[in-house]
Image (cartoon, rainbow, N blue to C red):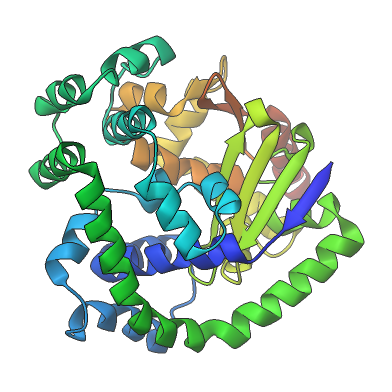
Length: 350
């Protein structure tokens, strides 16, 4: 197994993520509260000020960083690893193959709602040309503003990405002040993380993420760091590679979601079971594995909502995830539940 650590992909990721957070400030804060992340008033005010400092085009911000578009769906970690500077990544995005672009659009649209049309053959047919894509999204129950952006992008891809690149480059001066605010913290984190990874390897990564993913299934693990994100993972089993983005907030999330000691860890499992939706999801996973869209359809919720519930279940270890056939399949780890029940039996002398 090869483990690679490079700070540059995460630095590029944070430029885009800071804009999404600024444009969706209250929504993002609500998510942070749910994860139990400690409030940082000073830094949050700086994020908020991105939108209000009159140095940014608000219309463009709303266009490119709509609340309904989850940044993890459009920012590709693997692409950032292969293009680890802002200039290289913007160049990559601007010159993306049109067929691949259409597939990404279809993937984005289908991830926003319950949809069965996500097989590889159907994806090929839907992505055949601009007309098939536009016809497909025409009757979809998604934000009209997003439909309009897709039309503008497909109608003149070169101009669209030129405008986007200009917007990002104009933002950099503002972003540098934000980056400076957290430089000391992220530098300290990077040094400590790199040292521990070099000394302990995969064992440290598993401990750090509470075995969020079964990393032993991959030959190459690419890790980068983010000032802004908790944890995100992109699996590419065909390449036998896994891309991980972590940061100083990761441990906060793991502690609040998993617990600080063995007793808290067991109690956090019970806390997840007490959530009715998570309980029903776990029951659904008893007999077979499911992927996100199937669960969304079964419970009448969006795939994004399924992912949010799964983040909690994955961090506590109750659920595992494996990518097969271009889909992330979730499975129930009955052994974790069994040990939790044994803990309860022991503690209460049942």
